[in-house]
Image 1 (cartoon, protein in one colour):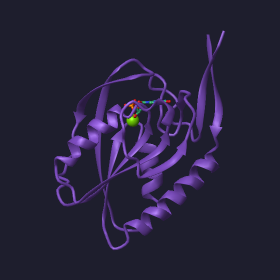
Image 2 (cartoon, protein in one colour):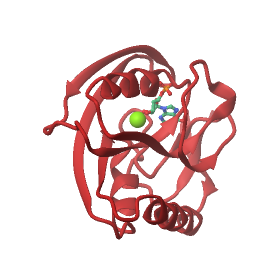
Image 3 (cartoon, rainbow, N blue to C red):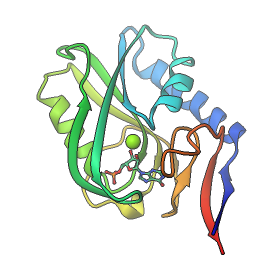
Image 4 (cartoon, rainbow, N blue to C red):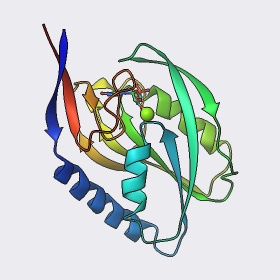
Length: 175
Ligand code: IMP
Ligand code: MG
């Protein structure tokens, strides 16, 4: 069986959209410092591109959570592999994610962060698959809503590969 990646969103489309989200964040956080929390590993490419376009003061932290489950489905049981380095109390926190799928990972994560009493807590995701939602999650900034297909690139992997693609593609399997 061979794998083939069909382009869903080109590099230019993704970059233009990230610029637009950056512009919106700059307006919404004017006069504030935004504390970006990257959810590793998938959110890392989006975080870098987004952070470069933010002009208000930025600080960064990283968190690594793994959700038990198969390659293509999360179970909702989330394990913190790497916690944040710094407290988020009284900070304007913006969580940066690659994709909201069932919503299970994010709903768990946001609840946990809320208990640490940030001044504000918002969510920014590059991709959203609304058809797959099992748990309600409020998304404040969305790059693209996409259909229910398994995508790779721009940080998203299939079995740890394809994260480095500079575009978003759908993985297809051929005999
Ligand atoms: P959720 O808990 O179902 O929302 O799952 C979110 C996580 O599943 C994401 O952070 C990704 O790591 C992974 N995921 C969901 N859909 C895809 C996809 O289409 N491609 C690659 N990873 C995905
Ligand atoms: Mg992720």
